[in-house]
Image (tube, rainbow, N blue to C red; front, top):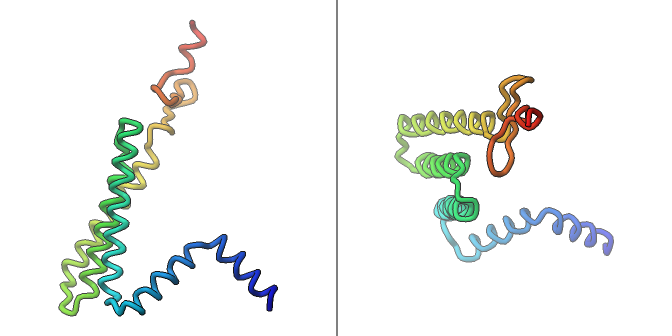
Length: 144
């Protein structure tokens, strides 16, 4: 029995998300909250966290990452899909439109990763390297 409890403690310490989810679920049951509203509030919290992450990254690095903006829109649209799909009077056209927009944003997200400044390469001879300050051509250093 002691060994089993120790294994559970080890599992929960490495997978704290499960513990947090259990606490949230028990809180919803004890406080008798509507599960739908709880999910909506948690998704709104995630959107707010992403916005704050984007703002703090902008303040620290003085540049805005397109990836963060797209992530915020995707999460916000997923939140809207969940709200509308759990509504009793579902508007399927609106839900399909939102899913299409989410798909478009996912395509933009993939493109922002694929063509990020850190991975620009034109050819072997003119490979551009990204260093924290600017983009430079390594062949220019050899000529100097």
